[in-house]
Length: 398
Image (cartoon, rainbow, N blue to C red; front, top):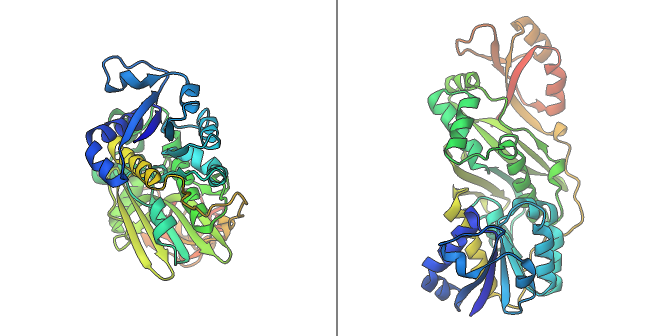
């Protein structure tokens, strides 16, 4: 029997508790031995809850208990999560987490500590919720050079953009709806400004290149500038607006970006709607692969966490090697990346022609402005051209 402890009894933590209890026999068969929850750590009380009999408020009780071999960190944030996870690994306990902030910032360091102590630090649930993507990249797609990873990695913003497309609603209305349904936090900044998918694409890129990619270095745009008018143009163009997190291999480095894109119907991510996530991977041997499923939510995320627990139990006293070294890789300046753009402007066609040369105009019946698409150009070239017109908005094409 393996004794485990859950740190945090929020949405994901309670889901982990539920799955381990309800699917006990199945999980035992998969892991090869029974998994028993000895502790749940939380500052709150949960009278009448099934966790009540194993609830503790002092982390040191868990840390100093030699019976606890696996710790499940689902608290979120950096403090005290980082200190708890680091001390657990140093004490010879394996750790799994759903905490993307922790993994993006300290993943390489914690992996190294786990390796030094012949233990494991796993984080399948940190990207894509219930979609398996970390394990495939680390263990299965290992004979390929990964040339591209592009994903819809945030269910909140994908839900909002899908609703704007289907109902013609404006941004503020769909944000309130997402908050009312529990998809968006009271403070939605991490989602709507793109910080959440930015951390996730940094994690995925770090895994495929084997070095640290700092999410702070990645050019990041959210969806706050996307309006109902943009969707009117998208409908005319038979396209869909999605917030993409992308990473492309360029020479010995990677070009990374998080930004809204207008996708053609042929794009593999165009049909990923609602709270679902989709991740497109291209390898030089494999070719194209798609990973699709529930990108968030209590049970999908908890399912990925429990899968890591099972993996660690099966590899007790054996480190599952993850190639992610602390040395930082400098990514390519996003201004050198090439894209085509959809542009809205209040300038006239003469000014557009002077600034951009030959373009393709798009009419959506909107008074007082012009819509057009450009040919492929670098981000730096676009910025120079756009400075010569009255820009309302621009969205990259994909």
